Amino acid sequence: MVTDPAVVAALALDGIAAGRPEIVADAPSRQVKESLTTTHAMA
Image (cartoon, rainbow, N blue to C red; front, side, top):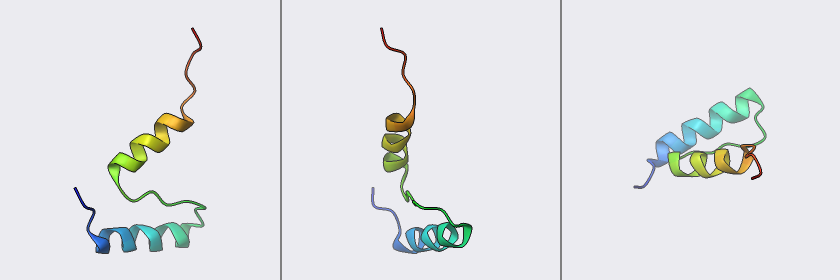
């Protein structure tokens, strides 16, 4: 699934206006980002 470029542009502008250092525009990328930043218990 391709994210609409207008949606990406709107998210980018919103992120810049909010001072966010990073903008993740699509759901799969957000899921990967969350999995990398989530603390997992070591077995």
